[in-house]
Image (cartoon, rainbow, N blue to C red; front, side, top):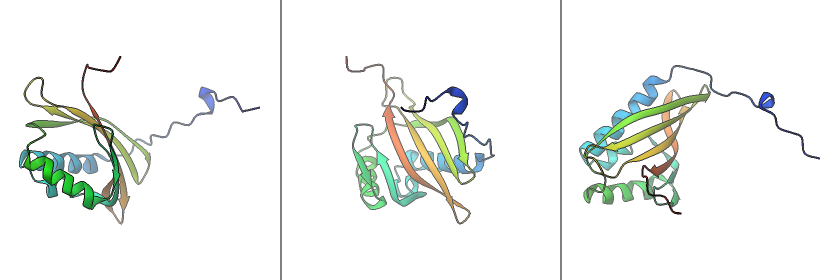
Length: 142
């Protein structure tokens, strides 16, 4: 028989560490990249083996493929002028940060999304190892 999982047996993983600098650097690079349509700036702290989930449900791995896609999307101005906003941050271990960050279109009704970023510290530097994007919309399938 499977062991019953109760609330009391689940650990709280958030350590409450001060990781504001790592998240601030990420948001700054994302903002500067989108504002200047610079895919290399946008992707500058992504790990070589990054896992990426698109807002349309595609999943890919690897900086090279992702950076090429971001170059095409930014050249086509797919993302409208936007502001990045940190929604939530947790630190489940001293070298891992999970942040939910929204990209909110400046114009009402523009394409906006929220993404979950996983940052990992390696050799005193923070790298984005995984991202999952989700559109912000009221239109869901029935």
